[in-house]
Length: 205
Image 1 (tube, rainbow, N blue to C red):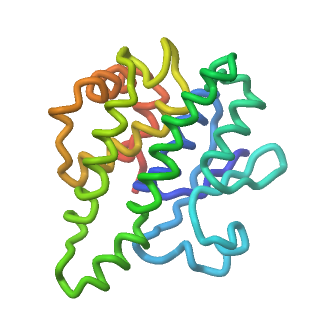
Image 2 (cartoon, rainbow, N blue to C red; image 1 turned 180 degrees about the vertical axis):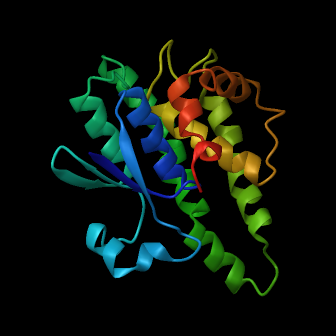
């Protein structure tokens, strides 16, 4: 049985849930409650010394880091999440990384909590999230060509990274009203079963 050690609100875990769904795989979920600090338990640190989620147990192996997991699933399950040509792959990856490597790290729960805690009340969690998410999505909007997907005319790694971050945006009150390209992509991807099933609201938390 495939096991995903995840947390329902973790955007990194959300990406992997989407990809598992796209691959048509069945898996069992082991909840690692980040709010209660379960990521720091000895049991979880044995799975991932970084104390992060997700961790995916599949094919007799244990994998960490959502982007590496997604690329593994893409390669082993023939998901075609990247364009065939080098230019297209680089552009799709650039969009994905803009979310996963630039925006996501500063919105990580432990980073945001530390910033808020050290601010002596000058920064709120909501203020921190809005200050980082809003401009990042504005830049992402400018990078998009238009259409129902982030790059080209088919699903890619970029779409898998975008949707969980939009969940985070909605959660923290970031408006998408001025982002028509992103809004169109979000509406389209919501019709794809793997995206709908992976939504945090579907998790038995």
